Image (cartoon, rainbow over all chains, first blue to last red; front, side, top):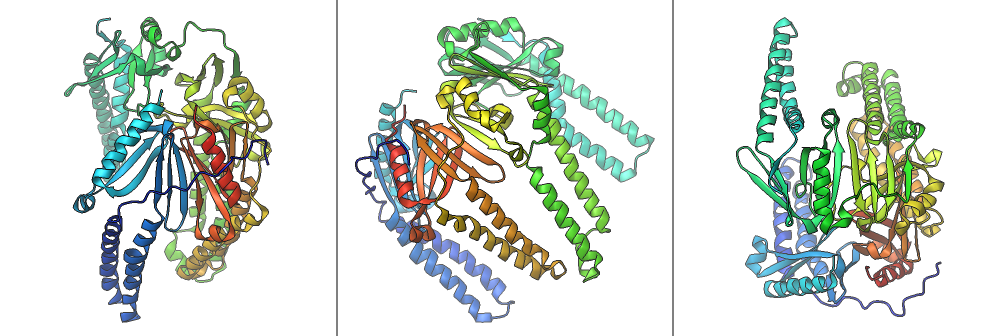
Length: 160
Length: 472
């Protein structure tokens, strides 16, 4: 295939998880979305043929959006901060494994939306020249420490 | 250095830009008055009055903006102050100056001056300073001041270039004629309007169809064809204006790119900021084996795509030699890539075909008179998928990564693996079952590349090998 030597051992999978509360954040968001869907189908369903069957649609949406997706998303999300890189593995449908070299990190911040604040959560946003990557729904104190840790590592790795 | 005004030619430049900003509202006002009362001498007179008022207003504006703009260069940095009502002051520290580019538009050339763009590291389009008109002597002074601390940001007195390439007149014309992606749109549209015409003239559901279309089908097709022709001509003219006299020269650790017909631009790109080269083969150029080379530059101010062109037109087989000469740091061969496995072919073809089938079916239900023509979308999209499969490929050799994919244009990304911003493998549920995976990378300022449906172990191995290429 090519002349490069094979790496000795594969990189260990990232192991750190998001806050347990993350599920509640996503459930709340899912509930809001399905609520909107319910109102719309309620309005449309009265006119459309099939009557009561239309109620099944938001029920299915509820089961997927409020029960299944937050659970799956939470159980799949893993991250790891190493001295020279950030390793992420996440995705409900498509599973993505991303690697960001610490050298490429330009700056890091934490953001908190209204729901985040209510639940005591925060999102760490990592900026590189090519765009932003997030680690969502961490306990806010912990997110602050993680941000500082990444910032320190990025600075030591940086020279540009 | 004390604070200085721009060259008075800036009045003209600023007035023109003010006029340009006001042009659209002016045209709307004019158009509305003509549409309201018809085109007569009264309307023409009003138009002339508006025009004179507009020019006068723009001139006053230009003068006031010139009066209120000043700049200075000292040991701390380049300072810039502007604003009539609210003043805005910008300072770029000398250590952050990435380049001093000169651009000479028609007005500037009339007065023998240039516009000087101070490019700053990580600056967006707003982060940089633009001095609209400065004399040659002032440019030299600024270059000297900046050059004392940042020799790589200025081009000293015309050093001998290592290598240089010019775009010939013939290549300029060929490039202009094959610019844009209309090559594929034109025949498809021509065919579909033809089909539509047949459907209508065959008399089926003629009332249905006539309700959907404006007046006569002939006029409708003609208007569309004319529109496409105009778009094509405009893209050709635009390409000539941007790329006339294109010259790229390598001089030590920077590339100097000069181009433009009406507006001569002269840009200096530090090589260490170039993170990748893209070999772009447009639909009209592919059959002739021609390609465009583009740059992915990190931490440089936002520029239009013409500004990120390394060379507008080049035979594809000369790409490797061209890069070896001008940009050896990134030189690589765009050919000889490893393709995705043969069993992945149907994954490139089937999903778009299904989408086309569903979309086409829906269109048939909505517009029964058009049946079965919308279903043609399915084989067309399948063909597109097949071509994408044939185009896809990758290679990682000597720390150089090459990734090729295709939307309408076939694009090969060439980059040192150590320059990647990030990389990822992705697997959807179908791919998990089949043991396939995508590889996606990001380079420079938001440039992305992806090769779909590689064998999962191959993608994982690539991911590991890219990880071990510690950035340098």
